[in-house]
Length: 385
Image (cartoon, rainbow, N blue to C red):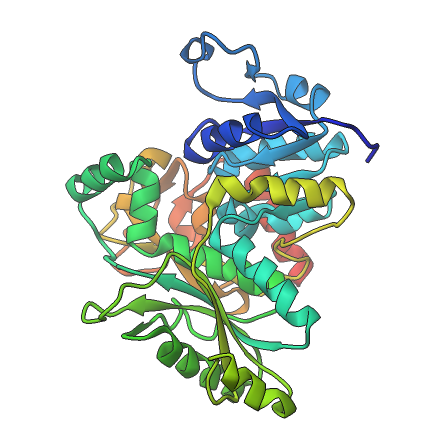
């Protein structure tokens, strides 16, 4: 990448993350937003000349593109063109990665950014591994879980939190955390130890982390999982991540002095993530040639399958806008369910056969339109043998 004083950054998406990233970059001296690709009517942005419907215009005016659209089917179509043009891609979109990220990684440089939980875990992992820690648990934290919230509940919380109904529902029913931990497992060489994850309800982070670490030692591999804050906990979990790891026993007394406990498993907590405010950190790293922070890897072992929330009858159309009220995502080993439908492909599909509540959807159960995303998933499966 040639050196420039100010880098031109293209953005895909005008939602919560995309809009926030634009505001963030507008404050910075070393980069500027050159174009923003949107599916919305351009009249929604009357005072801005940088919004466009043209992928080619985005490509022509960018040194790097950030994808934060949130729709893997649409984003895959766009990124195939962006990456074919030789541009590096930074994302804040774990669902894209677990759906088509392996296919896209063969096209060029694509990496998740710091800011959301997967990027935060990858950055923390890089630091700890560099100083000799051996991770056993890549952990996420969840404050509340309701597998089947009502539309009325989600509309209330979407307005209260300033995000979309789709986003708040995916967070509430666990789909978001399942996606994130599958992504982390594939990208950092961990495994999903149990379908749907353990997600131990815990009063205390360290207590739950120790329990997960013992499971990792039993199976002999690091695991990617999460802890659910107990309703009776004295203090709510922070919006952060943790890694529980082993270290050279010689340093046990020092780690105890540093308030990390007796060992042999030590839990390092990062108690925050700053979403779009941190994306420029990864942009700079990529433009300086530091490579990939986190992607889905070329040989993923885990996926996020689709679980029906209620009975689905033949002919039912599941559109993006209401997907999360019909189905949710659950972490699963690909070898255990090669015919499962990844949650990332559940946009504008038609149910072909009766599906019972709690049932995992397979490709025989649905009609899915041809798309780059569907082709990419099939390509990934074929490569895995």
